[in-house]
Length: 208
Image (spheres, rainbow, N blue to C red):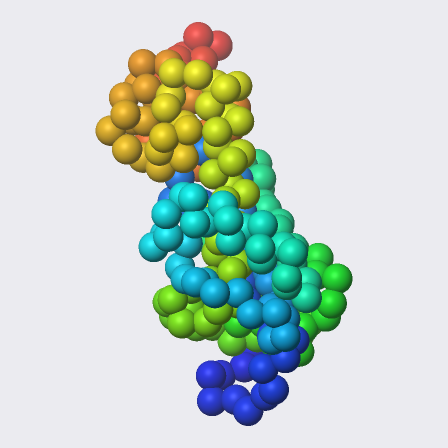
């Protein structure tokens, strides 16, 4: 159920929802939902991209300690390739809200659209800079995904994943050309798909 922003509702039990990882060429898209506790304020919440890594790490622990409820969810590479990145992101957001231990009265979603939810929802453009609960969600999602990308860098060395976190930087694109895609690369994304298509054509030609 989607709600416009001209609503009147108590501020308690409002979940902020955000995502990280729509643009990268590899790895899952990670989402989070957070219901903050008005009795336990958290100072310094902001869009995760505007915070230093050290500050995000500190807030990550504080949010999980003080929030009334939080949930980190995801959509895997296979789901991104099958559904497309928008629908996979909506699915991951839905999982985050449904995974909360407390049912929110309202979910505020960063961006201009909402996933299908059983609770009232409203989109908030640039919400991670405007709504503390969305900012908290952005921090949980980003720290969680960044940590995972560091682990993926150990599994797939040579791509620089720990540095660019999967985004299509020159370093990443060069490594893709040189080493080819890994199992965590998104086959539906153009730079990866372009490397796989010649292989598919060669396989077809070989069978004729």
